[in-house]
Image: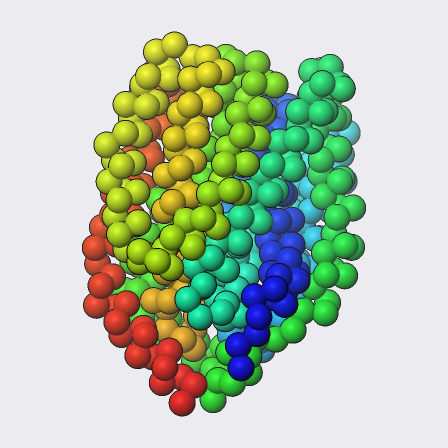
Length: 430
């Protein structure tokens, strides 16, 4: 029996709320990278301090593949609900540690060490959080609406971008820059800590998916790991596919305030307003493009968006770098937002569909986490380095073009696997 769409909105909110918290934590760290650098990584060189802070931001992503393997296997074996509660608990510990650690001037080297540990714990939990949410949404979706349902995984992240940017705008208007750099950046982190109990209340009543309960065999963690090793080609294609999503996302969200202030020398308020507009654009477009992928197919959207990114990314960034302004930054970021949302609206659900059924969460999470750890999470640091090394403010466009090439190649390689995945899904419930 098919459950009416209206009755499934609350489970969507329940499962997406943790995804909101995960992205909120990462966005806060990315938005206030410069202030965090001065607090925990003091140095005679502003560039060195910023790079240390951005590398710490990226370090959280290095733990994601491990989280994907171990926590993803747990979710595929024990169930979606149990796994999503576990990832939320681990994520909360990491959030609290980052928000409460004193600065370098107070406790010395222990400060950056504790911050890095907190980031690593957040990354470990995030390794399976995103995959668990995506798979859960795909399994509760009504027939013909899977793209629309799964798109709310990414849309919940955009809600975090919007909320963080709004909070940043208000804090920037309320506090002078020296106070924001000294202690004001901690306010958003502590607000994240206050959100944690509400999300636990939402998730504790989360129901297990019928798709998981009806499956004849729930593989053990060792079986899941062996299956992922056997299907390494699918995981590799998934990594290539996710690279376009993760690089474009972190470029137009977490990196925008740093890029706008450090490279373009625009006002902090302008950079946060652009980020806010990008978050709103993404939030509106993702469900629309997810629904569009249900109608026109996933692959046509993937190919079209990656080709457009290849053709326009560097020229758009060059146009911005030639005469930096709020209007130009907003125009370029919104264009990249359209490309990101259109691509991601199709990509996330497509990745859940091509993964083998028994390892759907672990396989999805591993592919996503590897791409984020290798490419996406270090996008702010890589873009900062490329601009510094080549003395060219448009170099982020080159990095995005590389990501688009990976996504295009992956989309062209998945045709045979897509048909095989449909057969596996039917056999799993028979």
